[in-house]
Length: 396
Picture 1 (cartoon, one colour):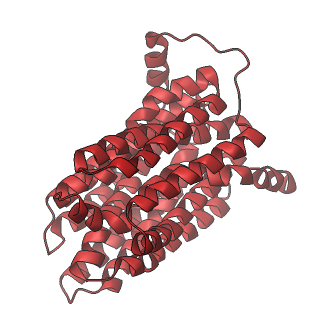
Picture 2 (spheres, helix red, strand yellow):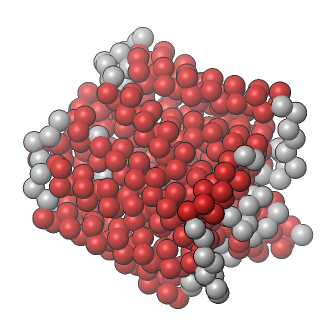
């Protein structure tokens, strides 16, 4: 049985470059945020929507594309999304104002939403049993490598060329992904099923009413929010406050990404040996520890490691929450895998976008909004777990 599972997991390797596409659209832009703001003459709060707007559209778009995946198949929706993403990334060449860039980022986010839901909805169709959770853990591990490498790549491109070069890189990457799925297609639907608006809403309601979905989705949403807080604050702290060059930004940022990778590996190994709800407990605890570490740093002399190391604990917890949350929330959905994946991603990313925007909008030199964000999110996870157990619902 173990050899069979390992074989299935190994067979998921072709999904790795595909699942990295959507997060790459976020992370490769991070080193250039302050440069974009200066170049286009925009405020930092408006420039923040280059990140938050992309994530918000990435999340909401999946509500539309999720049911379309169930109806038309993941292959067709991935192609549509990749082409939309690629085209609007290339159009950045003509950008001269921030509103135009934000408009293109909205369209990139919509394309990325189709790409993301196509991949994650394919997992329950391609695998079964405990292997689903292990594959989700591995895919999250791959995603964690993106913030490890993307800021370094982005920093090199920006330092040697321009911030627009990061978008040209994204366009080229999506072209390569399209070539890959021509050779190795995603799951298809032989006969598209007709679904009216009522059927779509009924599907979302059916997914939401399942207690396991609520727990896995909301707990992982808190984890995702903690990461987006770090992503949004890192250019401010590392580049603006500590005056570290854009070319060096990615190397410090990679420490955090390494923590995500370690957490994803641990989650993949623990899945099946321990209950997913146990991993959610530890994930929430790690985010709480991150908040404590950031609080201690804010009360002493500010340094880059005093910022990076505590945040890395939160990143490790984020990886546990994402893998365990996805396994809990999505394992029982096969026919509605697209709908379930879309609803989960929408809730995760919309919640994270709003939380990170609130933190940055109320940013201060003493990091109060960031620290409070970490504490509130960790406490929310614990409350969700207590409520779940109070209702006497057991995971299979």
